[in-house]
Amino acid sequence: MNILLFGPPGAGKGTQSAFLVEKHGMVHLSTGDLFRSAIKNSTPLGLEAKKYSEKGQLVPDSITIGLVEEKIKDLKKTSFILDGFPRTVPQAEALETLLKTNQLKLDKAIFLVTPNDMLMSRLTGRRVCEDCGTTYHIETMPPGPGNTCTNCGGNRVIQRKDDFPEVIRTRLEAYEKNTAPLKEYYKAKGKLVEVKGTGEVKEVYERLKSAIS
Ligand code: AMP
Image (cartoon, rainbow, N blue to C red; front, top):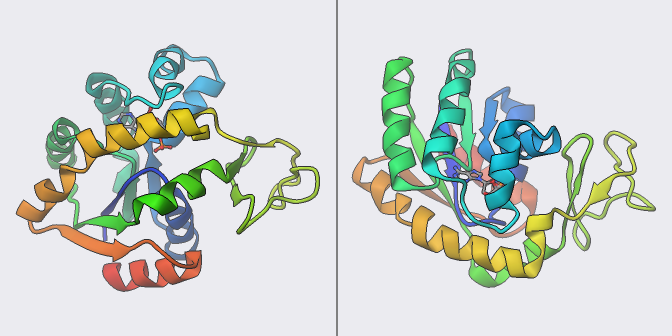
């Protein structure tokens, strides 16, 4: 089962992907993670992506599609999850071509339905371990004492720059303008499945599990 997980920032795509990877051995392709890693390592791609992602804007399609093109062959081994790509209709069209070229297919496009008022509190409270990527929330799933990571023991649990309120607003606008139209796109292709993204992380995971079984 090959799936796309999409929805607004803060819908829980990354958190749920981590569950699916751990429990179902799926391969996870997250363009957000790839961009963050490139930014951290100051690669040419990272320096370019940083200009956009720091402001909460989408990285241009040509750059993003080029990045996925390089990684798509890694998806051949087992079931995969696309997280955060595609985020625009031109990206979705490019993905179809890339999948076809690599004899791959997307089975379901799962939209995580999350009310707007919940997104802001999820995002402003989010903290991430810079070393291993484990995600926390200051209220619902706090890191260890002194912002330590309970997973890897590191002490670099931070707030992502794009999780500051003014940047979140730009991200939500970019979502409405560019990514929300993907619902219609995948509905027309008979691939859209809507899953409620509210409640406990494990409850959402159970719903997802039923959606992909
Ligand atoms: P995410 O972790 O998925 O929220 O992505 C973080 C940031 O990376 C976004 O705000 C964008 O700046 C950039 N990004 C990630 N995926 C894409 C994409 N498919 N298209 C354009 N920009 C992206």
